[in-house]
Amino acid sequence: MTTHRAPKPLAHPSRPVERAVTVALVLAVPAGVGWIGGMIYTVAGWGL
Image (cartoon, rainbow, N blue to C red):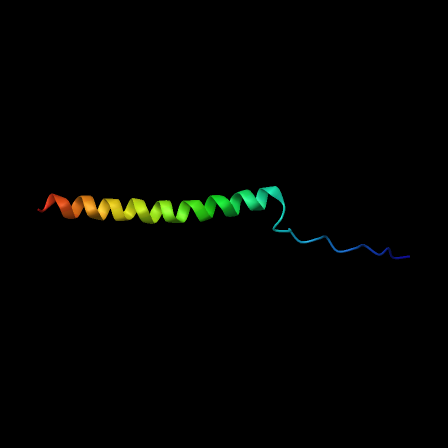
């Protein structure tokens, strides 16, 4: 006789771990863009 198993639930975005990862990525992207912009500004300023 076979048994019926309910499918495993997919990861829900309201779970704390996924929310923390999403927040970290949202904060990391502008920080990275700002860092790259600062490096470009610094290197461009050396030539002046």
